[in-house]
Length: 116
Image (cartoon, rainbow, N blue to C red):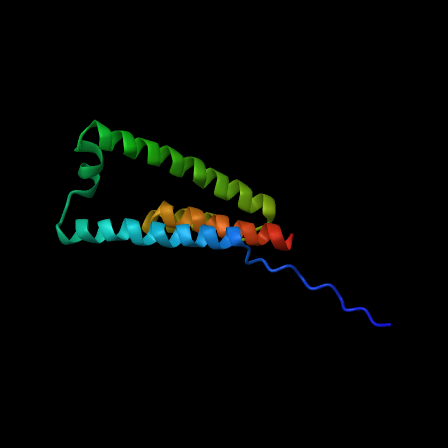
């Protein structure tokens, strides 16, 4: 009697797709505004910091979250043996952290499902 060997679990879980969808929304959502700012030759940094207390509050909030998330990415990537975890942080600086953080979470989920 022959037994079929167990099939590896798919690393493309529902949670992986949720994270990937959030990454796409983060990329499109931020770059829609970034392109508009570039086309209007806006003072990007000035707009972040000088447009009133509400904008400054949001900027501070997102900056702290991005720093904490960057630390998490580097530590978690090392813990799980994921190569080039730092690249997500660098990519976040040139695209948007709203894109790279969910992208990292999707790749982390795949790693967790497949095991080390």
